[in-house]
Image (cartoon, rainbow, N blue to C red; front, side):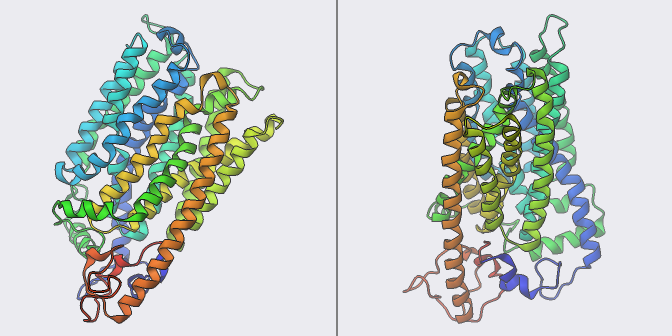
Length: 501
């Protein structure tokens, strides 16, 4: 069921978060603190995501100039270079997710920023296909620490019914990166000076901007939000109460345990959402990587102007997702919005796949796909974050989902082949199939959650044990769906047992 029917959420005062017995928090003061957290945390996270995404995907803009010719790329070597970055990206995502709490967010994210910035600058000086592949492989390993760890940090700092809006803020920066990247590429790829070509200046400038984020991240990002230098002591005290109240979703004192990882791997929801995420990310990477070439192939624009025509598409993607994320948190529903935006992507891909479609209709179809690319990716991860309790179980679950999902990035360069440009009809047909699969899997997972919620509410009514680790898990006993003991439940600790729909 949905979060608004959660017994804990329905027992609390409106807009107050989870209640703590014997303690109250001034609602107005709490709202001010949350806004302050957004300003300081989301700004840093958003800039990290903006430039990590830009530095990973700007190969699409570089390829509109002399990039492939200068490096002597032939056949589908460009597609291979696009895809290979995700080979290490997907492998390292679960690892960095689990290591975030162990290495601390400050050190892990600062180190990642330094590494990927250096690699981006280095890309400007590659001279052949082999060097390009080597840099892209290392880039994937370095950038894999950013977006999974950002989303895990959000679950460490915010209440469960605040996740989606914060995801929208971060993903909005990704959409902005597409628009900003198009404008930046439009200017920099025309620069021919100091013996460097335009695409080299593109990588140099973007890499140096990214490098400047490392000291900001180290200084401004706290390992725990209650330790933030930008909070007053009175605000830290309120935040400590807020974190204690939210301990059922995240406990700062939790220590690493292999049993938590095993508990994650036994949960079927992880695999349903992981496969669904592969289909969702097919849409994301297809559009963000190949949009300039797709638009250039519409027949009414030059190659350079195609970069500018990506700007309004990304703007609509950002605005629509901000609205969808707000509505999702407001209604405390995930799956209906997820299915809705996937349907928008499906309609857009169908229009793009019809050979006789007019130019105007095909450009409109790009907007339809864009409406769903960020909303679907984020909502699937928010849904997973809400439905797994315990830091390390949640970290591995979301990491595995992103591992499988981002494998689409590794495959997309071989599906959207260079020889199929600019219509990429074979790739469009594949995207239609993957989007349909994700819609079906989302519906299946929704019914699994509804069924599980009914069972667990019955257990709560019968007197389930007050163990926060039971979120999404079977309760031990002679009958695995009946409580081992029958004392009255503490509904505040049992809140994670009710899953988000």
